[in-house]
Image: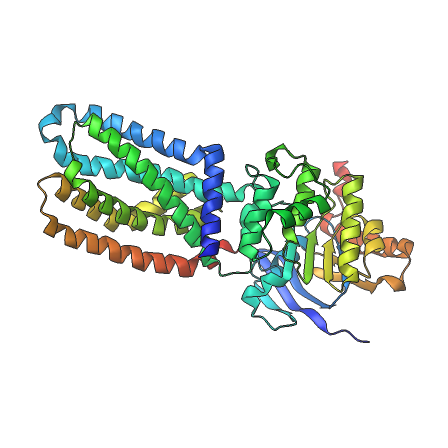
Amino acid sequence: MIRRPMIEVRKLAKHFGRFPVLRSLDLTIRKGEFVALFGRNGAGKTTFLRILAGLSRASSGTMSIQLPDEKRFRFARGAIGYLSHNTSLYTDLTALENLGFYSRLMDAPSDEASLIRKIELVGLAGREREPVRNYSRGMQQRLAIARAFLHDPEILLLDEPFTGLDQGGSEFLKWFLAQAHSEGKTCIVAIHDASLGYEMADRLVVIERGVVALDVPKTSLTLKEFEERYLAVTQTRMRSSVGPNAGNLL
Amino acid sequence: MKRIWAVFRKDLLVELRTKDTLNSMLFFGVVVLVVFNFAMESLRDSVRTAVPGVLWVAFAFSGTLGLNRMFASEKENGCLQGLLMIPVDRGIIYFGKMLAATVFMLIAEVIIFVCSLVFFNLTVWNEIPYLALVFLIGTLGFTAVGTLLSAIAVNTRLREVLLPLLLFPVILPVLVNAVEATGIILNGPDYGALRLPLTVMTVFTVVFGTVSYLLFEHVLED
């Protein structure tokens, strides 16, 4: 069965001043797809996800998100959960207060019992009344996962979500994403670890210098083949960007 | 309304835990009063005519400090990004923040005003309801503009400098009329004369509040 496109991006460009970050990026993502976004630092992954999340305005190009109930885009944020490097948590508030605040704004259940359940789900049972300031980076990241997906969104955008997570946290996040994927949610995850991205996703996209340099279904390549092609794409570009005298720096 | 209240309640809760904003506003406001108290030592007989100006300078300076903190705290850990992802009209963030800024400023104003009564040896029992009205409308005008400009300044490196530079020229009509109205109340009350400055401040607050609400969404996107 051919699934209909959920996200369609055409000739998307973003400039910061004169500096182009995205240049004519085209991508179509279907409902229920799990896309792993790869690319070097500064390739444009974060900017792309921020534009998808409605946090940043594109300089040119079009983007459309099809939602089941055709909500207006302004409020399509309700169908998107976005987790970035920042946890978006108030460190002077407790985990309960943080989730309570966001739940009230999102019209999600904000009673204490359901909030505690969500905190327990991310492995922070017993720490819900502690200020977030006392949490380690990994614990804050776990709570940030609970915060970002409080409203049970249809589209999950995650920007390097494994940063700062310990083994247990990483396993939990992998389980959480697999669960969301099996429920038919659309997942787009920016990630550096090729094997981890390959393991989770069913489509592999490499962004390089603001364009899609590689876009393949996982089934068409083995991990080794993908790593070779990923390396080839990024190294070709890197050689052209650092110039012939780069070796002198070493 | 429920969401505006949620934003306000969260700011209040954070402030109760840290007391960063109110403490700095209060100390700064009182320091301004102390400086003016010494500076006006030779004007003891006519001090009542100078008090409205001194009070509003203290209110405006301490209010600017508070507004600077308003969005700076949201930038830590990317909380502003979390707020922007909420699927509602972003104007509710503006109103929630404005409400919190107004309440913090009013608390600071009450304490600064009480200090001014001691420093300048004033008695104002009968005038308090009128003064409260002027302080409320003046503060609303101040925060209506200040909340928007604070959101603009927070994304710049020189936000502590930029905010007053943007804010003071815009809120001049509010400050001038607030000083005039406070002067009318403190110096031989002719309450009929309050109508004009109060009307100007109210119109300013409604117009700039509406414009700020409409612009708020755009200033937060990059």
